[in-house]
Length: 156
View (tube, helix red, strand yellow):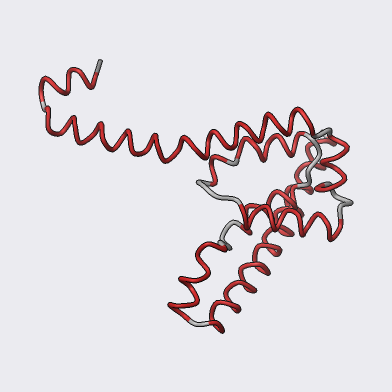
């Protein structure tokens, strides 16, 4: 109704606004659809025991590698992934692995050729290594703080 009224009062501005809304909708549709499909698949095929084994506290190096690769390969806006993160947490994924996933999203393989051609191999390798180390460091800190907070709340 508002766009109809807008077309009557300011047709050019309303048309421009409508194009912006359609563009945003098109950009968000695929990541949101992907997140919903992943949630359905996870709810259907992943049991809490499986998630806890691969991304739980005792997953070890396998869980770090898996959450890092998932973060590196993920695409789209991060907020589209939040419902999936909640589902993983509800099924037993650790705070560390979810935080590591989010931190590793800054490493994008599709952009590597551009980074190498713009800055060179040395910069690119150092940048990737530091991004990975910082993602792990942040995941450790978040895990410590959140685990500490969860323990305090469960005592109450």
